[in-house]
Length: 218
Image (cartoon, rainbow, N blue to C red; front, side, top):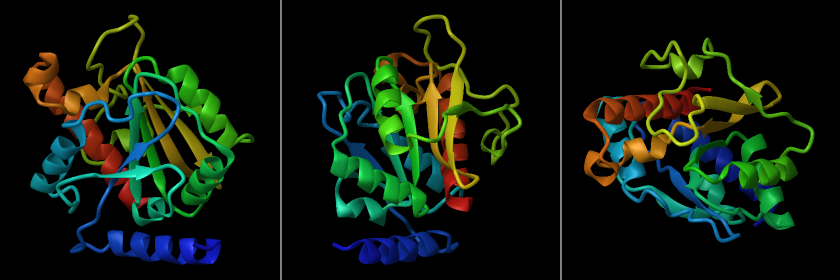
């Protein structure tokens, strides 16, 4: 599929996604390199159900799996990436992901502990001239629907580090939001999966809803 068709398709999907009565699909990004891109299988369905129930957005109940280099990537206004291990993007995947993000797409990456070094290495291929910066607590993504005056909630402890939210901007638009040392995806799962408290489960879902809402409105 040509670049022109890619762009036209994506713009059509994006415009439709902002219609109040339109149900959209979001994607789970499948990548190569050996990392478990399929981690937390219940997280996105739970987040979608929460967003739909609370009128945050109108989303199909199941997230579709989409590969980084696939033309289908342009069918999703929002894609989510997670895992614990290695990520490797080839040249075609790098180009495809960059076109997707530059064309209006949004990537949320949640470090499920162990992803950090690999993701930072690969996203530098996608945007070699853009820095990943920590977003201030005043950024709208923390105040979109639910208030998080101190930034990301801490769902799981690993190394005793505070949670951090990083962003990559293209022409002033946030195109990638990276959540680190928080384990939002774990928090979206049923509480029985990781023995999370209901309080942390709700915090994680509310922050996820903020990300979804922000991505659909900016």
